[in-house]
Length: 116
Image 1 (cartoon, rainbow, N blue to C red):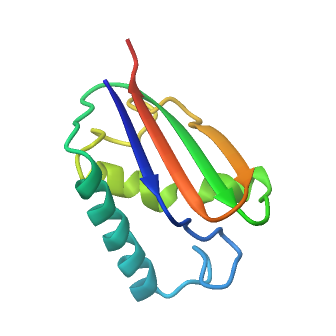
Image 2 (cartoon, rainbow, N blue to C red):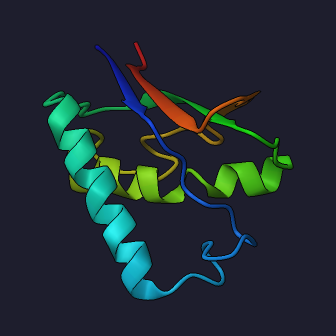
């Protein structure tokens, strides 16, 4: 099975204003809730075994790879909460997910594919 999710926005990086390190917990919860509802509105697929995830983030400015990988955190957590993937541990998602970035208007795409 293959699931493709698209979001017309990005999550913030670690160090940006309001990012994972500096952000307020209430703002983080609000963003997680938005992501959860957007996931539930796009799919009811349930991947019960091991998956490969491809994460593409488009933004006006490219990020360094370690900051880019942190922007997947909220999406990954909400994929588990929505039961799209069973767990985000290395047992179910071999590390690391494939990370891609493009320059342009804010947009995020997540492709989830079952390991055969």
